[in-house]
Length: 471
Image 1 (spheres, rainbow, N blue to C red):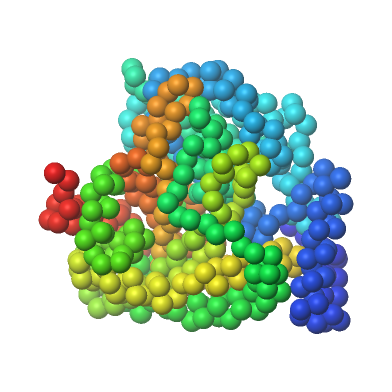
Image 2 (tube, one colour; image 1 turned 120 degrees about the vertical axis):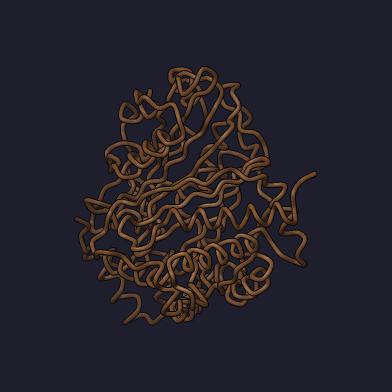
């Protein structure tokens, strides 16, 4: 049970009532540095706000885990263990920390080395097909991780086939988000830090950082209210209707692989569109088909959230950022029957809401929210996610081959739980010339979620076959 600490109450009262809003923010900035120094000397680190929500939302049925599977050339667990523990990343503080609650704060705690030495294990399951992979991933997602051990682990299925093994990697969502996971794996490759992404990150000036630190949280509150005002129409809202209220473990689904080159060719035929624009259009047509399959014909719009990554992949160990460095924006996604009809309206819906100023401001607000009572922070975060039909996350795993222990990784799959009030969470994984779409769906949904991912898959397949097939 996560406690309400007196220090947090004193922070709220002292900062915002006696010192005023701006001085209160300055007070919190100073407090964060003092708290970081003092707690660090005691063997603790304070959580970021984005990380806290993934801990305090856990209950007996819902766990905040991320699971990734990698199909790799034949590999044994002992070889992988020696490889992992020889890398610089194994000495990173977060990699050797568990979770505790002290002084009313959710904290990372340093662990003795002997508690951190057995995170790479042999998987004894009898798995020889894709359905078995999905079932084991479901098992890992719906099992609570031990807070007294590092919040990452690897399970090696040595004999998936005569030529292939499977590495199942599980991390707690507080330890890492999707890009954080890719950053972590990048440190473990035979050529560390070789992964890259197309998105460019600009180094912000001191003046810019100071401005957003002081005034960004105020603007972020305005943006949050604006985002909360967005809503699905009555028919579109039926995609998240459930048969019962209580939270249940999620069910996961895996789509087929697509040629990423074909997908790129498809979206580039439209003027000034991005990969995200294209995937929003595919989701739009998937929703349209899914609802019509269930005799719901008048839906016009559904609210969709898209997490935006705010940090680059590391090029050296000092640049590694684990934890959750993303900000979620949302839009009212218009529904259409084909990608061609929906692409520009979906693009307009997203880019009319999204801005760099909003993302940077919300990041600064999150830095302050970790000093308010954790249950209040959780309720605020949960409230923000209410009314969302789907969260859509695009996670680039890099165009380069992943090579570990001189073995090439061929396939990858990614899943996590449905956060807070979400009922549907879709992940788009791109790696090399492959793209895979996976879906995490609440088990109590009235509509069959398998129909939804099949509808998205068929929308992309039809668009590729009709317009963009590689020669």
